[in-house]
Amino acid sequence: MRILGIESSCDETSAAVVETGGHVLSNVIASSSHTFHASGGVVPEDAARKQVEYALPVVHEALQLANCDHESIELIAVTYGPGLLGSLLVGTTLARTLGSMWGTPVVGIHHTFGHLSSTWLHDGGAPNVQSFPILTLSASGGHTDLWLRTSHVKGELLGRTRDDAAGEAFDKGASMLGLPYPGGPSIARNAEGGNITAFPFPLPLHDSDTLDFSFSGLKTALKYTMRDAGELSPAQLQDLAASYQHAICLHLVDRIRRAVKEHACNEVHLVGGVSANTALRLLVQDAVSVPVRWPQHIRYCTDNAAMIACAAGFLLQENPIAMKNAWSTSATAPLEAFLER
Ligand code: KG4
Ligand code: ZN
Picture (cartoon, rainbow, N blue to C red):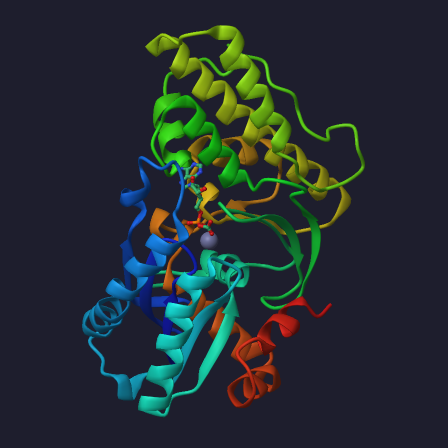
């Protein structure tokens, strides 16, 4: 089945054509993130305006690159939340409009469910075969969740952030250090060659039994470190970026290591924008004995429509009743299906 995915939850506008199972025929992404370099974060109204500008062209290009017309699209999958309201409205309105024009069913997909499906995306050849139960860290600018999944659509949320998301810790930290948005890639670039032990940072929630996350203490520690250090030389900036990045990664790894001890799993997956971080990938591989996977390309780590289409395919395979209801009632039905234990 060919599925058209649409993702517009933040500052990326994306459309993709994906075959059930994860074969990506096209995945077009237009981003307005460069317009937010100076502001240190996304301005919601500006992001929504850009969504309106990019929405139709990305769908058009995705169909063209996949070499198909709308008649071969059997399902439209769109992110319905969470995200910025104005941005989301553009994508959901577009999906519903195309659905009614083409007579194609439309299904709403939870953004995190999209990220959780992203390790199955591939560009042809052998499909990605993976073995449940899978422990997945989904870490982005908006959420940081630890899931234990027994199937594509069934799982238990073991832990989540109590304050900032991991990506937010990168973004806010970068802004404090005077580095451009998005902060993850900026800090990673500046951390290269830096000394990870040059500046001490706490390990949040280490002595507590929870599998939750907390990043606000690291942000505060960065603020006081910068106050005490005064003006930073380029070498000090490099060391501080490396130490701060290492502290965020160590906290993520600490939770994953604990979760793997407490819950049997065959694999660990890292998804969401933060899974693009090389230091994190290496630390997790060192910390656990099961295979560790992340999406095949960076473009599948950060927001993209291919993961939304892929998730819809899994939902249809595993829960056709929820899908049927979703078509005839509201686009929010699949969330309940996904969170059903
Ligand atoms: O999944 P995503 O594209 O959008 C949301 O759902 O939020 O994630 C974006 C987040 C941003 O906070 C960005 O700074 C972070 O992912 N990010 C990274 C890297 N690339 C993107 N964080 C750490 N290292 C990276 N290489
Ligand atoms: Zn995301």
